[in-house]
Every structure is written in structure tokens, then in C-alpha cells.
Amino acid sequence: MMILLRLMLFLWLTSIATSKNITKPNIILFMADDLGIGDLGCYGNTTLRTPNIDKLAKRGVKLTQHIAAAPLCTPSRAAFLTGRYPIRSGMASLHRVGVFLFSASSGGLPTEEITFATLLQQKGYTSALIGKWHLGINCHSKDDYCHHPLNHGFNYFYGIPVNNIRDCKPEHGSVFQRGLKMYLPTTLQITGIALISLEVLRYIGLLRISHRVLGFVFLMAAVLIGILLFFFYNFRYLNCFLMRNHSIIQQPWSYENLTQRLTEEAKRFIRRNTDAPFLLFLSYPQVHTALFASQSFRGKSKHGLYGDAVEEMDWSIGQILQTLDQLSLSMQTLVYFTSDQGAHIEEIASSGEVHGGCNGIYKGGKSTNWEGGIRIPGLLYWPGVLKPDISIDEPTSNMDIFPTIVKLAGAQLPTDRIIDGHDLMPLLQGTALHSKHEFLFHYCNAYLNAVRWHPRNSTSIWKAFFFTPKFSPEGANGCFESHVCFCHGNFISYHDPPLLFDISKDPEEKHPLTTKKETRFDEILHAIKQAVTNHTQSLAAVPNQLSPGNIIWKPWLQPCCSSFLNFCYCNHESEENEDLPAA
Image 1 (cartoon, helix red, strand yellow):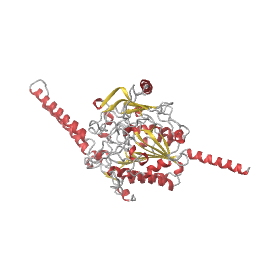
Image 2 (cartoon, helix red, strand yellow; image 1 turned 90 degrees about the vertical axis):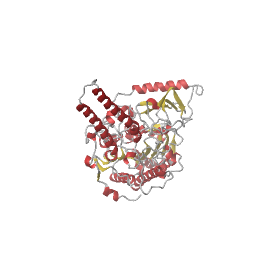
Image 3 (cartoon, helix red, strand yellow; image 1 turned 120 degrees about the horizontal axis):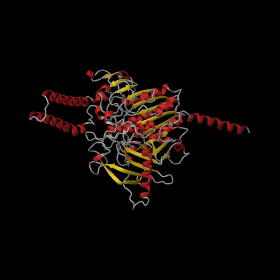
Image 4 (tube, rainbow, N blue to C red; image 1 turned 180 degrees about the vertical axis):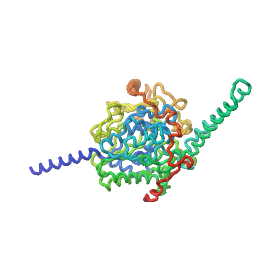
């Protein structure tokens, strides 16, 4: 009898401990930038060393069909933070440019949107974003911070508010070079022809206009072109800066030991918050170009600077996991690792060195909804709660993190809006065998590009494309001539009927189905089109945050830590950099 009572007491205490472990755990979210699913050892890579990331897979759960809600940084991150398709928040462009490029743009994640950070903050969590934001800064003035992380549920921000691009690093080229070569000569020609035509018309008497007005038009054209050239020439000083909360501490940022600095900030944040639940979103600028690696990692990988950057990021994750162990927090912490979208395969340096990653067997890459653009790593680690070495091949989305951690924190999901993500815990713990996502909608900017359908009673996963990008040169696996693939006009090919694949049997998307190959072809497309109708009817009209008026550079919104005369230069962090430990 005594043994039975002791056993019951043990089981009761164990259930209490487990309950406490699951209730309000610490949350650490790692997000890489432009990392391919084929870059990691746990997803099949044999030449890049990622032991710490692989450890998450070995000791936790690996999602093999984890899907980004968009194949570009800005919309994917908006979906991740809100659990909603970016089209719902206006974070999907109707034009060619699908991301924010400038710090002085007025667009960004709307204040009406609710992030998981906001909901966790309301439940007593201390939250931090360390690294890349890329969801806007200001709306109407250079210090209203309406889109800033601190206005979206984060208590602390240390990182880069826009993006790390080639123009941020001297001698690494420019993402604008191809566009300037394409459009600037034409713009100058049109401007010149227009001015000459005005002068000719005035001279022959068909147009009455004074020399003063004509001179003013010429002057305005020259000023606008001058401002444009000045802006792009000084892009690094105006857009590539490091912030701590609302303050700029380094403009432009220094790449020296940048990953180490981000890592140290993350470790300090964890140590400051050992007595209460915390949310840490560590959003790495790597491995988006411009590539960088600390001296300790440079030249150490088999894949040049790209491989060096991946391996340094893996080191950083190891440092965070080690900190959790040292503070005895591992059992109380859910850890998640992902990438915002697939690898940017068109990234090749002027030297010929490949600066883009590997998407494994999957077709295409960043900016496309082929599997290579949206199938991303998805690793979850939580000792004592999630069983080790589990692989799940059900369709899941990066939008699922929102409801998953909100529920774990004891918060309520918003009821005044549609949440497109689903709680992952039943799937992760094995109490559910199938994903709640029957349909997933794949957008290319604001255009519905493809639909994935996983019928409840079938192992098949159908994917229908309404249009596909035209790869260039012909026969390539990407849009190398334009550097990224675009979503409309002459850049795409429409398909009627849609291209149909069974992803469960053809994950490489090599063999589109026909009525001859698939007897249920028409039935499948009918079901998908009905789902599209239902989905479209659920969308509400919202202001577009990526409209030309919202993404254009607005000088009055320009963040600047000194003055324009000093090219906004400042470095308030140099002393901290000297104190960093070696990797």
C-alpha cells in the first residue's frame, strides 16, 4: 500500500512539473536570412559543418515540409510575426519591388496588426528582437517609430532595421546597378528629348514659353537626377545602420565581429531574464548578401565566404544553447530554427564566387513559389516535452509559430481577425497525425501564384500553379539575368489549365500532371479553385504598405545620428567591440 501511495505521489508531482514546464516556457526563435534547406547537415548537406543546428534536429523535431508564407524577406517576416498571409496586412506588393529597400520609407507593418510579441508581452514576457527587422521604421516623421519593433511588442531591440545588402559593404557591388543601367540611360534620353522638343516648339512659335520657365524645368530635372545619384552613391551611410532601441549607435554599421556582437547581446538578454519568462527573436542578417564572417571563421569552410557565414551562424546558435544549459534553462525553453525563405541561387559575386545557398533537390529559389523558394528548415527543440529525433512530413507553415507560442504563453488568439496559422503542438507531440492545413496559398507579391492541397483522406499533396516565372537564360534554374524573378507582365507565363504536381511523389516538380496521367485531374482543380474562391472572399481591402508611395525614399524620414554634412556618420559602439571575446 505504501509503495502504491508513493507511486501515486510521484506521478502527481511529475504531472505538476510537466504542467509547469509546458505553461509559459521561454521562447527562442532563430531565423536565418536566405538560408537554403540544402545548406544544413540535418537536411542532407555533407560539406557544410552545422553541428549545433543539426543537434536541434537530433534532439528535437524536424519538419520536412515547412513552408514560408512568402518567398521574399518582408512579406515572409510579416506573416511569421502575425500568423497571417501578408496580403491581409497590406505587406504584399502590387509592383515589381516586393521588399523595403530604404530606411526613409513610410511603409511598414501596420500598427493595427498584432504580433506574437505583443500578446506575449501582455502575459508578462520580456521580449527582445536582436538582428534584422525589415518591416519599416517611421510613418510621418523621422522619430515617430510607428513601425519600429518597440511598437510591435518588443521590449528591447538591437539590430538592423532594414536589410543587409551588397550596397552596405564597400567593394561588394550594388543591387541597384542592373536597374540603374537598365533605366537611367532611358530616363536621361527621355528627359533630354523632352527639353529639346520644348525648346524647338518654343523657337518655331508653336509653344509660348519663356526661357525662364524652360530653364526652371531643366534645373528641376537636373536636381532630381542629382539627388538620385547622390542617394545611391551614399546609400551605405543612409540605410545601413545599427540601432539599440530607438537610438542609432553605428552609422554605417561595421561588419567586424557583427555576428559575435549579436550573439553577445542575445546572451546578455537571457542572463538578465532568468527569473521570468522571456521571448528572444534572434534574426540573423546572414546569409543575405553582402556576405560577412568574423576573422575566426574566414576561409575555414569548403564553400567560400557563404560557407564561412553559415558556419559562424551555427557557432552562434551553439553559444545560445550553451548559455541555456549553463543557466539550467533548457528544460524550460522552446527553441525554433528556420529561414525566412529559400536560398537566393542567383547570387554570384563579380569574381564568379557563388554567394547563394543550396535548396537541395528542390526547384528554384528565393522570389519564386517553386519548392526551392518556400520549403525552409523547421526545427523545434524542447527537452522533456518534445521527443528527440522525430521527423514530420506534413505541410506546416512559418505562420504556425504565432498560434503555437501564443497558446503556450497562456494568451488568447485574436478573435477580430483571421489567423492563418495553426497550433503545432498536437502535431509535434504526436497527439495529431495530420496537419490542420488542408490548403496553403502561395503568393508572389500580391498575386496568388499557386495553391497546395493536402486532402484529409489522402497521402497526396497537390500543388497547382496559375503562373510561373520565366527563368533566364533559358534552361536555367533561376532568373539570373534579372537577379530575382518577378511576378507579372513579360516575366511570367500563365497556365490554363494550371500546372498540377503531386508533391508527395514529385517533390522536384519535374513532371506536371495531365488528364491522361491523373484521372482526377479536373476534380482536383475544381476543389482547388473552390478553395481559392473561399480564400479570396475572406480578404479585406487594406492600404498597401509596399506601394510606390510607401517604399520611395523620403528625405524627411531619414534617420541620421549626426548630420547630412557628416553623411550621418557615428560610431557609439567602438568601445564595446573591443571588449568582445574571441570566437
